Image 1: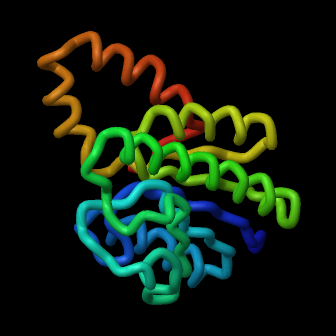
Image 2: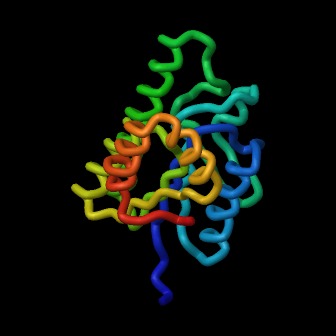
Length: 170
């Protein structure tokens, strides 16, 4: 299969310099680029590490990225946190609509557990016939252990959240 794909990777957290999870997402992006695919690495919510404004957009080890929340660190106040998330989601949906009109998006890969953006992305992807996947290779066992303590969360999570996606990258 020589088809070149237009792939969007959506991330919430520390990037470009982060932990193991951001490194894995970066690794996916870099691998897709090396295979000749187009990759858009979009950050919709910042992480805990403080970066200067120069890190809101750029290129890191062959991967171009854009922070759509326009914040370099998670805000302290709850109202500002919610506002930052809403801005990130709004800018993401605008970006996806514009990009999809220019160059059909083939695949969206989510690297976040945030329900609201995942829910909205699911509808966007279904409407535009875009495959929607969730990268889920580190946290299932940790989350499962936590959610066993609160069974209703486990039930909601697995019956609703996972059904938003066309598949999982494990």
